[in-house]
Image (cartoon, rainbow, N blue to C red; front, top):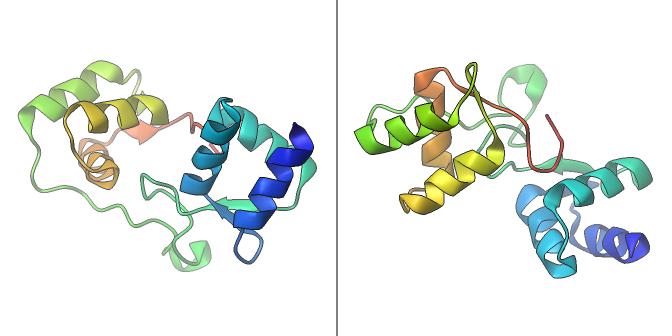
Length: 131
């Protein structure tokens, strides 16, 4: 199955990079956790992940401070803030928990990341194992 996953990743890659959404699609296609896709790609290929669905990396040159697209949110819906604080521990929330909250409130994932930025809550761990 590892070879099939690598072929699927290579076919979706652009200039040596695989988008987070594509990695999650591959995980769904093979009915495995996204973290397993991340492990396989990191262990057995030279592909890099980019275009994090929470906007945390892969959107421009890191050296120029442009790899993130997250901004501090101005609008902080009370019920979402409460859910994020409840799901966080020691100033961190898992990527999976952030996605689940976005889904529960029908709120964009990037919007959730913007709220997290305003609250000073960091996302970790990543579902693909990037951080």
